[in-house]
Amino acid sequence: MVARANFFTREDDETLLEMLDRRDRCGMSALATARELGLTKGRVSGSLHRVDRAEAQFAEACAAAQRSVCVCAKAENCDGGMPRGWWRQ
Figure 1: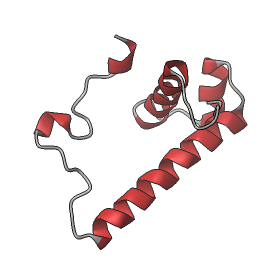
Figure 2: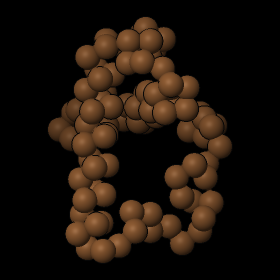
Figure 3: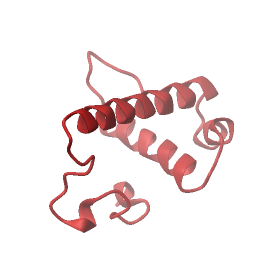
């Protein structure tokens, strides 16, 4: 994921989604993910770390505001509501 003045391309987004899918749904390591996607382990580890940090900060802000982390009006829009690989379609 290469930042260009805080602008990310569709390709950057899809790459990050692939990383998250491999880690969260397939249980793959950062090294295995890097090899499969043709990336460096550092890029995969760094990207996943930034996502984890942002999610933790959001959860803390929600807890401080005494609100649910998921603010979706429809249950199907909550985490896990989309089919696997939805971004590839």
